[in-house]
Length: 112
Length: 112
DNA sequence: TCCAATACCTAGTACTACTACGGGTAGTAG
DNA sequence: CTACTACCCGTAGTAGTACTAGGTATTGGA
Figure 1 (cartoon, rainbow over the protein chains, first blue to last red):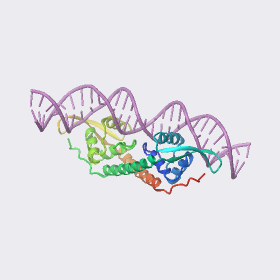
Figure 2 (cartoon, rainbow over the protein chains, first blue to last red):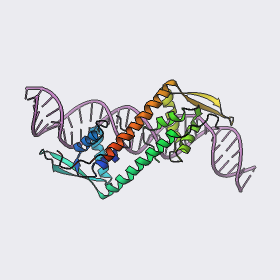
Figure 3 (cartoon, protein in one colour):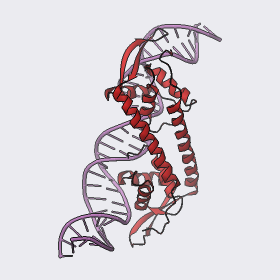
Figure 4 (spheres, protein in one colour):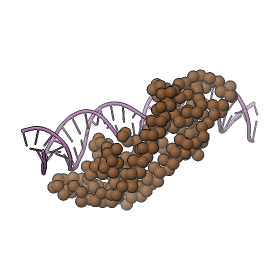
């Protein structure tokens, strides 16, 4: 499934809202939580992580995984936690608005 | 409210699924049906109409409005009607998938 | 020995909505 | 009579974002 542009950030923020994770784990979580419907490509993942870090919503630090590899673990900042709320709310409002338009009585052609 | 990229086409197709309308009326319908939340800018509207026409989903024709102006009325083609179904379904599935990820149990940091 | 999974990354591309214009008409408030 | 709003069409250029396609390296299993 193609991702809608503008919906990735909230998914990443939500994914990191529990414990710090590295990029690959973020990608895997989103894929698995969506039953394989959303595949977060690496060409979108890593730039997005840097973007979010630059905005101060997440913070990265190199650590060692359980498998003994070096990986960059990201965690939500306080700012990021607020942003998550903002974006979840915005998403739900957008969905409601879309549904509203998709179900509104259609206009007649005779309108000016 | 900023529009999510990729959600405009379905709104236009849906708007035109009743009677033929000109661009301005499409814009007005979406704005009013969304209670002023979605403002379809002209720089997005007209290119989108041409895009949809090029894909064979809508067809435009110059006609005179009730106010005596020349305007380009667009109507859905048979192809466009099918596409509307496809896109509405895709949208609903996307929303369901997003919600699924936004509500899934979070992973623990200890994952590999 | 080969391949999948794990882990990182960048360069370039395509697509799409937005900003900021420009052109013109009709009706109405002042 | 003037200014302003609503009506109607567009285009050019920009910004943002996910995708394609490539590269590097390690680990473990078949």
